[in-house]
Every structure is written in structure tokens, then in C-alpha cells.
Image (tube, rainbow, N blue to C red):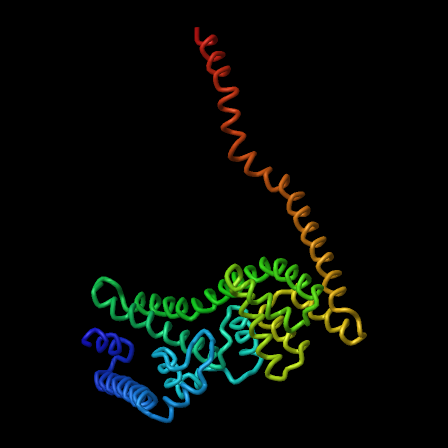
Length: 320
């Protein structure tokens, strides 16, 4: 506390203003804590809220009725203030969250709340940790605190990008198996909805991410959403270009009355050819990529082993 007072006093150079600022900060912190605690206890203890959470319980990543879910719901009045009002700012964040597997309505609010929490947490750690380092100047403390706050603001975005990229790659690698199973199911006489449900059951163990998306497609179809719209929603959630191409091809086939089995068979063959071309392209690049490791890593060692003894013999002869 004394260190914080000294830090504020060094910036303001006035003891009376320093005490007023300190009292204001303490009052704001106490008010925020009391408000959060009141909302949290009220939402947990309310019988209506408890019954509503039980009735609206879904199979998503965050289950209603769990302690984490109750805490997030109770902080809704605070997290709403953190989301930018511009739609184009939140659209990309919501899309990234969907690609990473976070589809809840409160995902964007929780994401920005996590950003603010990490900023305050990192800033506070640096400021209070500097009290144990008396040789550090106030300017250095301010610079380090701002850098740590910037790191806390950027860290959720970096982690979200990595999670989204990893999930997209996982779904992309599991899509060929799902496509082959879908072709077999449709050609055996199953409808598209039944085939999707069957494929989701078969992929539940080996590819749970894609199986979850297929289950959501079936749920939307049962709720009354058109099949193409449900598939387009899956393509938007996953962010995989191959799934978008399949949905566009199925849309054209259904509009013009084509066979779904033939469409899936043709797309499966084209997709297999595309994978083969991609593998051949990667194989053709190996020779070029191996030039630098061979030149700078393996060739010096080989040259030393092959030519080194002869060079030593020559030096020995000239030395005599």
C-alpha cells in the first residue's frame, strides 16, 4: 500500500491529490467487488435462475448449471460493457471463436473479459512485484507495466489463433474419411440426414471434432432448418474450404434435381485427385528444401570425414 501511494505521489507530486486518487481507486475496487458478489450470489441462490438453467441445459462445451457457467452468467452485466459496439470488430472475433470450437452466445463477451482481466492481472503483478526491487526506477516500472499489460491484451488473441488453426487442420485431415463414409452410406440407400447421423456415430471416437459438427447439423435439420442451410452453417463454423466446396456442390445438385450419391462420388474422386496433387507438389519441393540443410549441416561433416585424413597426411609430409 505504501509503495502504491509513493508511486501515485511521484506522478502527481501532491500528497492531497495522491490520497484522493488512492481513496477513489479503493472505493471503485470495493464497489466492483460488492456488485460482482451480489450478482453472483443472487444468480446462484435464485430458484427461478436454477430452474431455468436446468431446463435450458444443452450439450455444449459449457454446461448450464456448472459453477463456471453460473459465474460467467452472473458477470454478464459487466462483460457486456467490454464488447466493442462496431459489428465488424466483433465479426472476425466471433468467426475465430467458432473455428476454435466456442459457439456459445457469450463467447465474445468472455473473450474480451479475459483480455481485460489479463491486462489488469499482468499490470498489477508488475506494479506490486516492483515493490521488492527498490533499485528499479518509477519510469522503468511504468514501462514494464505497460509492456506486460500489452502482453496480457495480445495473449488471448494469439492463443485463439493457434486453437482455431489447430482445429481447422484437425477437421481438414479427418474430412476425407468422413467423405468416404458418407459416399458409402448414401450409395447403400440412406438419405442425406440419416447418412450424416451414421457418419457422426462412426467418427465419434476417431474424429470427435468433425463428429460433433455433423451432430449439430442433424440437430438443426430436426429443428426445421433446411439441409443446405445447416450444411452452410457447418462450413461457416469449421472454416474448412473443402467442406464449403462440398456444400456448394450439394446445393447445385439439389436445385437441379441431380443424384446426391453421384454428386458425392464425383466430389470424392476430385478430392482424392486434389490430395494426390498436393502430395506430389510437396514431394517436388523436398529437393529444393533439402539444399540448405545438406549444404550447411551435412556437407561440412562429410567433407571433414572424407578429406580431413588426406589433408592431415599432406600437412605431415610438408612438415617433414
